[in-house]
Length: 214
Image (cartoon, rainbow, N blue to C red; front, side, top):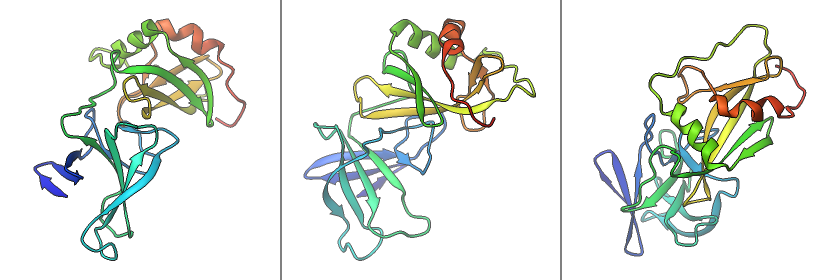
């Protein structure tokens, strides 16, 4: 493993894999516990372990190397430290040299699922609805959502699945108001909340959201 500027390179059987440090609105390859706003693997996560990076696995920073479940071409790999140590790498997703991901877009997202209390409430596969969401998601002139007090807003998630790499997903935060039958989202962890496009109004208003505390 070598460092090259803001990236690191992992060489496995002569094939080079790269990892960049996550920055807002850019492709990211480090997975943190409960991470959002970056491409990570789906629920399956690891495939089989294929090796260890490091001269001595009993010393840090040795890394276990895994395939990504569902990635038959080994386009991506996962690493995880053999031993825990403060300040070391966390779960790390590497992509083969020359492969790019980028932020989610209408061209790269195959489906979008709305998740609340770990239940999938609905999934959108319609390219027109996906394109409508991506248009407002990347819009600079989007007005903030009007989040009224006392509406019982509940935290939810929106999960986008990658079209070319279906074993990868991108999760963002959402809020849903059972009282108003409306939802909003944000494009970064500390960003403003924005309303969903009007085209999504009927789907959101008709969703059967579970009962629970706000």
